[in-house]
Image (cartoon, rainbow, N blue to C red; front, side):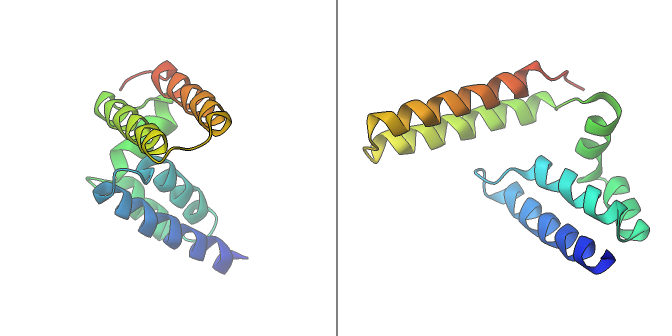
Length: 117
């Protein structure tokens, strides 16, 4: 079972790192998932990830305070607006836009209701 957790951690880490460069991929949630998986498979990888100078601070902020960095909140808001704008530009059916808009609003409420670090 440790192998499955390790593979999940590596996949989450790889996709999370891609999210640094591709704004539509959710970096921090994937890093949190990677830390979760590594905690169950490899203490060495978990410690490396949590102590990493770039990748570690968002994980520590979330684990210690449930906090999201203000810069990350702004970037997430921009990404959400961009995704919704693309949906409008693609001419999705109104019902889909309503469902997507409601879901994205809930996501924004969650993000902005978290404390800042």
